[in-house]
Amino acid sequence: MQNILIVEDDKNLNKGLSIAFQDKYIIHSTFSLSEAKNFIDKVDLILLDMNLPDGDGLDLIKEIRKNYNTAIIVISAIDLESYIISAINLGADDYITKPFSLGILQAKIERLLNKNTYDNKIYSKDGIYFNFDENIFKVEENNISLSPTEEKILYFLVMSENKIITKEVLLEKIWGIDENFIDENTISVNISRLRGKLKPLNPIETVFGVGYKWNL
Image (tube, rainbow, N blue to C red; front, side, top):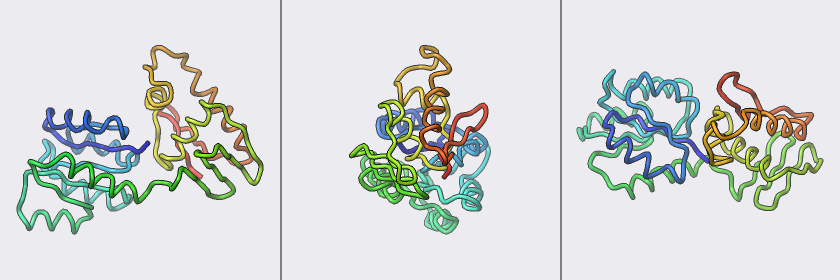
């Protein structure tokens, strides 16, 4: 499941967008540039307002484009042609003015995110072949067998390649429950089993105190 960051200081709009897309994507919600900077390396797409309490969204676009190719859709009340051109020239992938159609925004999001999805749930890279549709999992030509939970975790990590996935998100998306209602060792035990089955490769990186990342 792909990650979207909403950077919008209008709390009602922020909440509305979060609710609208939470069934299809993992949503991270922030209200300022300083908060947004903590998520730049964790998301696939950013919905970015321009007038924020601590600065101009154009500055965030500049910073992102120094190191990342994360998709960016600007959502702003500013409809000046010169401003829109500046945002696009700095690296925004699209620009939509308020008020806007939720359906059009959804179409724009899907267009950008589909560039980075794996066809037919197949992942093949550096000695690894996973076909999640047909339940075929190979590491260096050797078949491996996964439990349903291990398969869910693996799929979630692979489809979020190079993005940090927090333990809280894994609990919610894999088990569908709050962390307070499951033993804290559940994730680590399943990750350990997965690592054992993926040997001699070690693509699951632990980000201490935060979560995990698929980094092959």
